[in-house]
Length: 407
Image 1 (cartoon, rainbow, N blue to C red):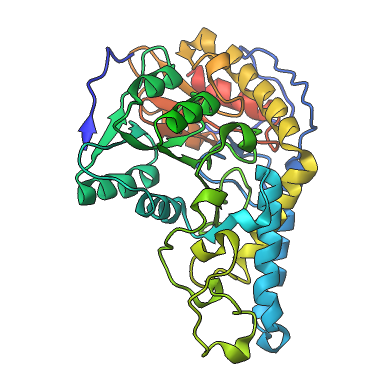
Image 2 (cartoon, rainbow, N blue to C red; image 1 turned 90 degrees about the vertical axis):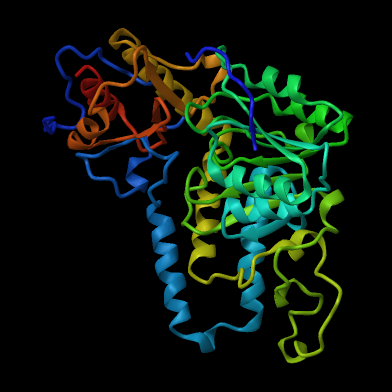
């Protein structure tokens, strides 16, 4: 794997009533498109959770759906063969509605790593070819392509963080006739720095390269124009911004890629598998669309209905409204954090729901521990304090966060 040379790198628990002000912290009044949805979650008043980019809390409706779904497995005589396919259909169609695709284009997978391995396996590579990725990105995107490059004699290239946060320019400059594929996010997972995927995808098509996207940190919180980007593969884990359970994910496969080779050869992916009485009549033909890429045992009776419930709530809120609301939240945090010596990627180059706070000289020692002690939850990723709010955060949460940052 090649890492290109880079340029110069750039206490006490709070106990005050919800809604109370704190001396020395500027008053914050959000004007969200959507009102606070904290009542839909089970977050205690004393917790300020700014860590959706790590893992979302479950909605009450998602947990309740899961409890009912698990109870059904206790009575298997009430699970007819048709139910195996119904739960898959419901999940596919809800995810497709969110992405702007059709249910036939969607495979059900367990993780981003599974989807990336599928995309890499179906991408022709060899000596003299390159796959482009971003340095400091989530490893599930990196490992499969690095292994595929090693197997075929190709080159895995990690593009370094640009000083001006212009990842789009960096990627476009790296694309040439050697490029076989690019495996990219919509925004960088440490700080939310955006990529212009429409421009990048157009350039990749010019050189005949594949585009595999990990939209785990954006889909569900930020609108995505599938028709404009035209990716080959889109892979999303459900446990973050899709408000779903762990170990469930979805993969969009473009129509041009739907004849590829799956990682597994599961029985449900074969034509005619709905007829359980004929499963011993082995079939060579696959189910239509992207279903050949489903993981084995995709009809997870507990998890899949939960994922569907999370998708339904997002569709009810509207992704554009979610993004507008969270953009105002992160802007308020930046306004409060900058006087304290912190900085973030400029708004025009950052996803609105995503924030990475940095400070000259590095983050204060013990900051993560002080945040946790105060009941404020965020993540340190690289040299950034990653702040990823959702609709459950309110003004008091922001006050608690800024109070700890003030030290």
